[in-house]
Image (tube, rainbow, N blue to C red; front, side, top):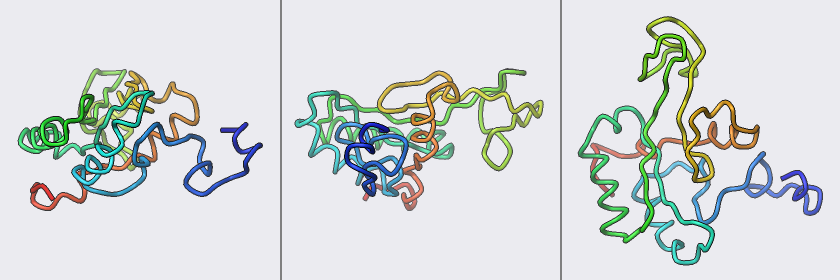
Length: 160
């Protein structure tokens, strides 16, 4: 990104962050339903020669709702014929006591069991799964922080 900015300057929604949007993806900060994101990316999958995973981020409520997760997967893989698809589920674990689940604190970075802030977070960044997001480089950490849940805009868990 540093070299790009030096050559071309800072371009809004292209180089105004520490990372590029990967491949044919909708930018990670765009608020939309999972089905709208899938609709957009499914049109671009065939043009991507460098990988074409289509994924959506879901919140903890959706992650515990099998029907929602199944609807998203069915839509991605069956209805839109996306060959490489994923649903990113929240996954945080306390390194101190081993608790796994929803964390406390303003940023969700405090273990509700023991109070530790030593939290590992499994997450997808630029298409790859990271076992501990906080050990990724600054650009990848910023991308992860900018991600929005696509389930926020689902009303009554009904598609479209």
